[in-house]
Image (cartoon, rainbow, N blue to C red; front, side, top):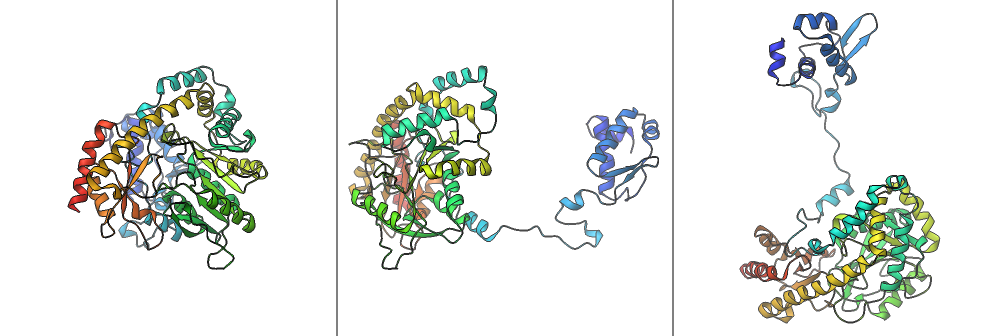
Length: 484
């Protein structure tokens, strides 16, 4: 090793010398317990400054490649760090091959059934709003003002369930728009619906508990229940929503949780009838179950009056309400909320802080101001009109080219997607794959079922597709369907 060799590495001399010595230790050229030359001697031999050599020695010492003995010098360590990091030893060492531990059975199940898409934008991605229409300039003004002289408390962790100002504005919005019975103290801000569901399951459930889920249902709920070892009981959905079974006969186990989307069933679109809602509330009271109401896109209804929430139907209802800003603002915000019964609110605040160490308070302050000044409600009104037009365009194309029977019979005039029915003999997963190859995103309906009895269809999101692009994209979709 010489100065020319170090310079050939194309790095500063101190870094180059460190890498040369480290390489010699790793390949065995410098055996364990070998004494390195004193820094002064090595500097003179290589015609380098002593500080350069000392940097290399100190870095090797910090990383465990060498150790120093006072009065004796610097020696190569008996075991290099890579021996702990590498899964296999050098072939000539004679050491046994080491196998890294694999996934747990539930982790393997989760990945095997993974449904999240690596592509989240474009025709016809369901559940995605038109983020290009978000009033980012107004939001940037609010955010810039807060960042100009931020309160230090907003740059720390959150403990009490989120920023009080945001919890208050969310409570006001929900009382007016969704008929929710709540005070600000019952609102807990989360990082999206998935974290909200995870918190509910962790704090209220135990492995082996039973959860009723709609059949079909949102894959995200199923993933969280699966990783938490909660048994899932699929309950059929019809035009009136979940068909609430009786547990008295013993044919269906009493649930710990009931996960429902009563205002706009996901993915089929049905609205749960009043009779079914009351039956579900009565069953929950009798069995001690918790109803988890996912109100994911209730702001977007294009005809008639908004559907009131299940939570607000009766006083002290055994309902945990979950909402999100992903559909009304933009998914990358990663912000949702829980509305909890008063007896659970403080307990969940502590649990949330222990598990997730909440934060993003400055963002929460910006959203609170965005809501308080009326921008949030105005944005929803604008997007409701826009999405209603886009839905009408897509529904018209489906009816014209495939017939009215191709629109799923449970669909209501709401939400951010339509379900296109396919014949029973079709393969919606193969069609979805063919569409993806041509730049069209259409989720297969069959993937949303748990049991063996599935329906064939495609989920088509229209919210993020400009009207002028719906026709050309649908033409490609139609070609893929007809080829199949």
